[in-house]
Length: 283
Image (cartoon, rainbow, N blue to C red; front, side):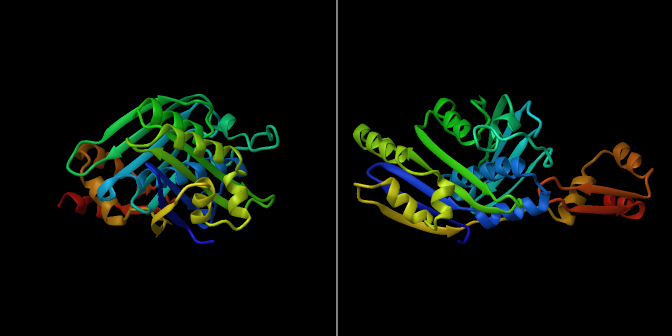
């Protein structure tokens, strides 16, 4: 199934669903993740795409799950239909808990930091304590407590024994101001009876079909379908610009090495600059 995000509405409630299986497997290969690490990172990436889809003019959003667990920070950054992400310690493994990967134990206790980058405005940071480190619950709680938006988020990543991602994606429901309480209650009841999102995707259900299952008993309006992809916006030119903005003292310190290497956490690319190139930056 292709990486795709579908937007729908049901009587004052917007429902977005997406499949990110191929995208999350790309992340898996780029970062060399353990089963646990890609489960956490894949959920964060899917969540970032869902939240970015609610923003206007392709504004950017960064989700940072900063806990005290062995995974370290789990970071996902999305703009429009593009996402990138990383986890501090991608090789971490933990014992299975209740038959599932222990993402909550990997993330630990701490905070979720949500940064929205709006056009012609200063970045806006929102903070909230992590509920359980399971990513979806933490996003649901953040949106309700910090942004006062009633939302339900479901995210999942299914990994086979060999470590390959075979299903990834998620959905969320978000009440608009005119949403009726009875409609919200019925949709909640529908969700309770659904299998996990990874089970739905692995069984071949498309995001559009998932939305229709959530909206059983209601008229479902499918408004838009768009491809989503993994994409880092780093380039050698951008890195050079960042280096050029450093102080003269910092640049001089770098020149003690024959070659300066700058590494991008998001895509694992490295950019090398010689002393001659560093000298040319200020010119």
